[in-house]
Amino acid sequence: MLLFFHLIPMMGALALTPHANREDLTLRIGYVDLSLILVWWLYLYILVVIPWQFVVPNSFSFRWSYGHLIEAECIVLAIGFAALLIHARGTWRTVYCNLFAASALLALEMVIRARAIAPGSSYSGTSVNLLRIVAFLWYGTAGLVACRLRPERQAPPEHAPQRNAWPARIAMLTVISIPLTTLWTLHSHSNQLLVRNFRAEVSQLTLIVAAVLLFCRRHLVDTDRVRLLKAAHESLENLKRFQAQMVRAEKMVSLGQLAAGAAHEINNPLTGILGYSDLLADDPALDIRHRTSASKIRDLARRINAIVTSLLSFARRVPMEKSELDLNLVISNALSLNHFDLRRKAIKIETVFDQELPHVQGDPSQMLQLFFNLTSNAFDSLEECGGGNLIVRTASQDGKVMVEFSDSGRGIQSPERVFDPFFTTKPAGKGTGLGLSICYGIVHEHGGRIECFNRPGGGAAFLVEFPAGVSKLPSPAPERPPTFASQTN
Image (cartoon, rainbow, N blue to C red; front, side, top):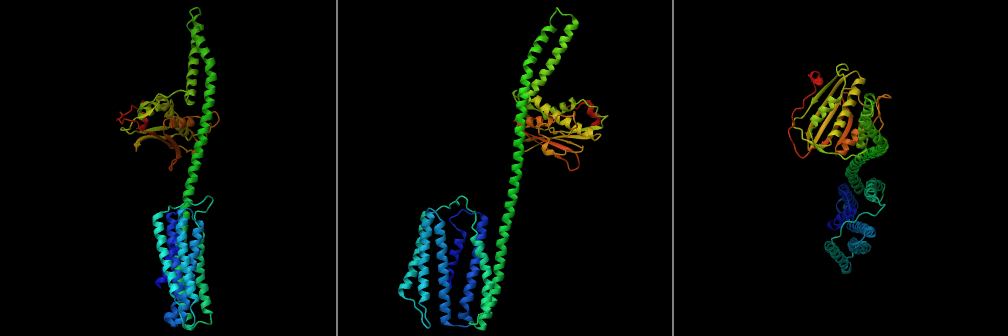
């Protein structure tokens, strides 16, 4: 029995394909395959050999059944090593070549021994035993060669499946063969009644064990497929988000180029207008009425020049002047710049500022523009629904400074598109769709992140994150505009 079962672990090693890179799941499935192989060969041994050894003792039938069964086992092992020898490369071919030669020699010895069995006699000559001894020594030599070579696992070839299907097919054939063998046993007229009953009981018990192992194997495969499906879904979502960011970035680049071109074309004649208006406004030969008109033209031209400078800043043609900023103070200034009659519009503002908020590195004018646009957007949303509350929070966590603008309005229909240039949900003439896209560009220019989402209780929220600056200084409580003080209370 020991001579028969010592080959089964080697069959399990074949199912694991030790030369190939394998995952943990493949290894676990390989253990289940090993268990199925062990159960199946144990079943064959009990079915074929044990009845003639214990149920109805018969020396010749025992030796004949055992000889042919171990002969089949050795042939199967030799075929398995031959298959691995064909698919292996490099030093693994040397290892498998030695193992195949040893298994083929042992199979030859078992074939000769099985054919030498005659009724009433048994042949076990010294030459046959010598083949067995040489085969065992060759197995040991193969192990020493593998230990010396230490072959590395090889990657699968291109366009090759990650896992072989033949272990699963063999496992299914193993389970199917058990009831077929039972039917053959029950309808065989050559077997005695005790032998048939014994084999039927063994087949039923083995079928239950094999079904449990097959269920475990299927469970492992299904669990891995669910994991792969979740990973594929997450990868697809990440790819979609990355693609949306790339499209948005391309739109911002195109819009910046358009703004830079327009600002350049406007700036050329505007320089002449400013120069001539300065000359006219300072010319003493003109009367006071003409100098006043020239002064108004100069003021309007300077205003246009400020707009052109903003366009160039949006196109990133104007270098940023970064400094340490207190975002609490910047947000308070942005709120005070909105000239709205908040009482008449029933809009209330609440600020929840972190007084220990770290400073951030940023351009003061761009930061003010960012929070001014976010505040204006929230006011427009609240005005559409007849008023509401706007809550502005600041906090810090894990080296990040976070600012949240949340309103109690109707929310946003497409939060994922609000940062696209020229996308707006406002009526015609009310908005251009550039305010939030400018905010997106400013935040990313400062190495931050901005996102928009609808709150579960209603309304929209904008979350802005910036990396904290070098210093972390306590910021004084910002002076709130008198317009908001009474309303917040």
